[in-house]
Image (tube, rainbow, N blue to C red; front, side, top):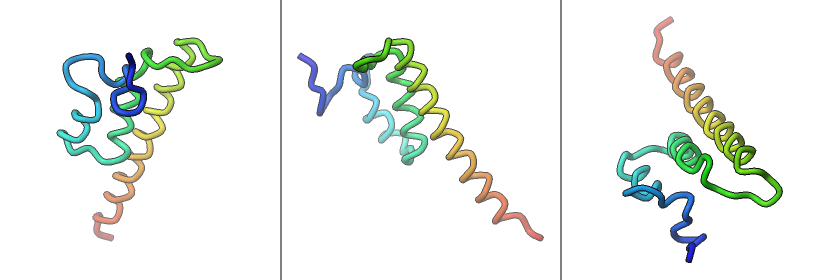
Length: 83
């Protein structure tokens, strides 16, 4: 039986649960979400959406968080550049 609260099946395929990997690597919020959405891509079902449509949505979510992390790091780099 799928434990949708503690161990959802779309995060527990493979040898390590996604949350354990994210915590072990020390990823922050944005990068943790990138890993989460990429890892569940094609595995999470959604009412009213095909598996392919949900997979594409997950990839777009991953891209959103990756773009956000890149923007934050670029902004931080600008702060450290002398005038």
